[in-house]
Image 1 (cartoon, helix red, strand yellow):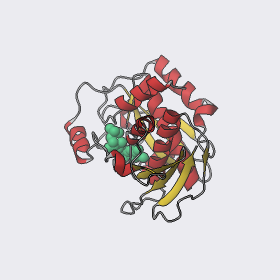
Image 2 (tube, protein in one colour):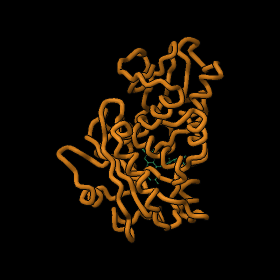
Image 3 (cartoon, protein in one colour):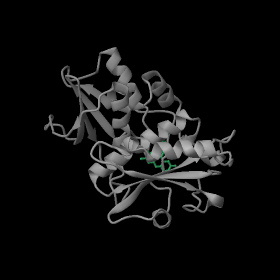
Image 4 (cartoon, protein in one colour):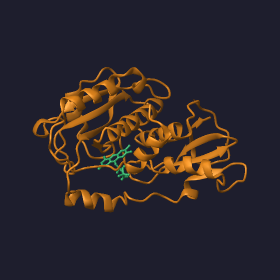
Length: 266
Ligand SMILES: Cc1cc2nc3c(=O)[nH]c(=O)nc-3n(C[C@H](O)[C@H](O)[C@H](O)COP(=O)(O)O)c2cc1C
């Protein structure tokens, strides 16, 4: 869908945007987004498919106004079942939408951890049996100037930085740092993936070309769904597209590891 050079540029350019220009999307932009999110290939995750909704945010009436998001003309919601695999799919597919938005010059900001009124949002979207709104994002043109609240949010979350490369990724063969420069370049793209608390809760061990993803659990946000799988899904998407490897499977190769195993990609 994206060629590798484009993808790298998009991953490096993308930032969460919380202050929008307030200008409506053009008919062409709406058509582009709808075509993308309704394409069955783009709804497909690792285990199954999700669905997306694009909703106009007339006078902040879609899901209510969230303190920190200003002037967003539209929101996209990703809807799925409430289980680990489906949430991993939501993370994987929603990050695809986020990078697509970036590719057509529109900004986004994942909202899943804290910032939206889930009950209100559910009423607007209309859920089928067992479905939840896994995340939403404003989508639109960013404002020329960030609001003070946005500047403070980014400082609080240290959004311009990430944990050290060698804290996040390891080579099973050497038991330490990944040395191969092409592999390091691919994992740099994973390192840049967004995460709810900007804490990169994933760790990856690469073993003979197979990347094994683990999660570090944070239990202090008592949400009724496994929001960390969204972070994992987004990181796995960055890996699959950057490495051009899409064979995802589950088994636990490193049973001595005390992190929680999630998925492998080869
Ligand atoms: C799964 C997920 C949930 C998020 N939830 C929220 C949220 O509820 N509120 C918010 O302001 N930002 C949220 N974010 C945005 C992160 O705070 C942001 O990605 C992180 O600080 C890194 O900044 P960057 O996206 O500009 O690189 C979320 C991101 C992800 C991936």
